[in-house]
Length: 148
Image (cartoon, rainbow, N blue to C red):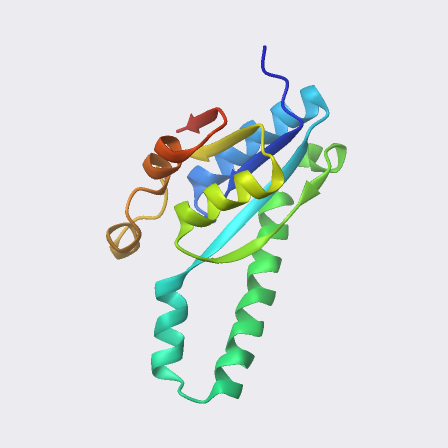
C-alpha cells in the first residue's frame, strides 16, 4: 500500500491547481508527508523577457521581481487552506519546460506521489505549453493522482 512521505503538487495558480493542492494536503496530513508545491516558470516567458529587454541588468531585475511575485502567489495559494499549518511544505520555483522540470524534481527529491490537476491554464497559454499533466503521467516513475 502506498504511504507517501514526499508529495509533489505542481501549480500554475489555476483553480484546478487549488483543487490538486487540497487533495495533496489531505493526503499529506493523513500520512504525515511533506508537500512540495512547485511552480515552473515556462522558458517561453523568460525568452520573451530577454527579447524585449536586451539589457542584462534589467532582465535580471525583472527576473528577481517575477520570482518575488511568484513566491507571494505560492503563499497566497497556501493561505486558502486552513489546515496548511499542520503539514510541512516547501515552495520551490524552477524555470524551463514545466513537465520536464516536474519530472526532474520528482527524481531529484525522491517524490513518492505527484498530485496534479488534469486541467490547467486556459486561453493561449494552454496551446503554448501543451498538456503538462499528460506528459507528467507518461514520464513519472511514481504514482500520479490526477484531479479535476
